[in-house]
Length: 597
Image (cartoon, rainbow, N blue to C red; front, top):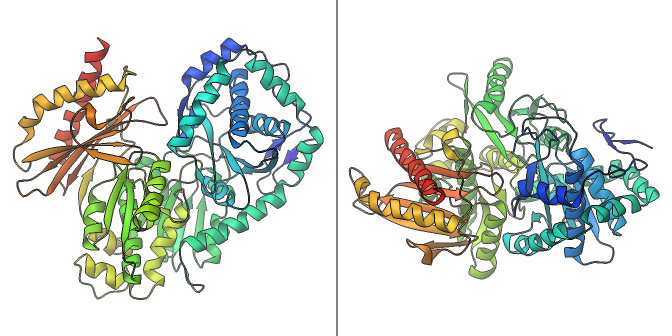
């Protein structure tokens, strides 16, 4: 019998049809296929489209990938180590998620798990609901990656497992993949799934989804620390781009909070442009906001999520011109972080702090300094930022209400462990709903005002920085080397020879900061990092007074087979930014050539 999602009408699964029946993959096929995977705390990802075209939106995946999906589920159950674990399962809106989820659920049921099947679910939704008595969640998603990608995230208690846990799970998984009979085991488990139990799981889906919605709505309200009379007194364009958020709480929740919502591409898989919500991919939202504002001036904000709906970036309306503008990811984070730390300080928090990743713009340091709020940095990866924030709370007594990855936009607001555009919208709405907050905030930023609350005034008041967008073509380098110890040594040999030539004009001195996990060390050379040297590397430049001028950054991507580089410069100094970024790209490419030649 086929089961469908009542909310969207999409097919979920047919318990009588086993995708692994007649599997043609061999153990060697599986071992070959696993080589394309990237395994990290940010997710286990690969191109799953059978064509291997990362922009392919077809549903078909290889038998080897289905075996791997089953093996991941088996590894997860083994890690949990409970006789009948309660597992929450969901997918983002990628077409390949359907069959991958089918195999995963069959494997989990065969291994005696009690499964709650949410089907389409945004990452913040499934992670929030995992707090409701579940032993863990298993989420099938590739987040912001192109449509042909997919992957697996798992965790518990509201967040993905951190690097320490994932580093223990990965060797166990790899051992299973290398073991003889990996295909046979996957086929047997999928076939062993009790059809009646699977049908019962799917029959409960609609009710389970409503319970998840209700939990998630209450969770968002609690995170916002909102008064019961809190309202969103403006209109919002929600350009969903066919993401999992189109099957989540957004529109009814925002309506209930008082916002008007103009929804675009608000059906799952109604994908109109590239997935990552950056640059030109926000153009549709920007143009729509301008058009809707002409009809109804209350519309001043728009947002676009990625496919799993945790990352969301924004456009805003400049009222005096009627023009809408795109907020880059760094400014989105700075905006919501500024509002939240101002709220903390105004409320009397004694030791406020904020945790961010290494490539977050130093704009946040300048803003935080105006409120006497300390900034701490972790390596790239949401789990790293969340772990650092928790350590600061538990071990050092800081009040860390907000954290996040400025390079990716959006905020993670305690007790959430994942970013969420709903949290960003609620932070922005605080300007309009919390008496005195707007005045207090602008006074701290040194801005005088006499008019009503204005989002554009606050955005204009943020410090000016010139920062490489994380998903700019200039921020990505495809390198040959897989030995990052050797790569960084080669890079440092070039840096040491050439850096003196850059100590001119504004720049008088430099310092190296190396970050692994939640630890940041100041120092040049291998003594300040550990094998395999995949952490972030930052070169910071100062003027003659010791004040920040700029930094350059490099790190190995945790989700794609690339090296990411960037530059961050104080002020509107595109010339210095471009000069430093070109130098950084050149150093990395030359280092790669040195060790691969």
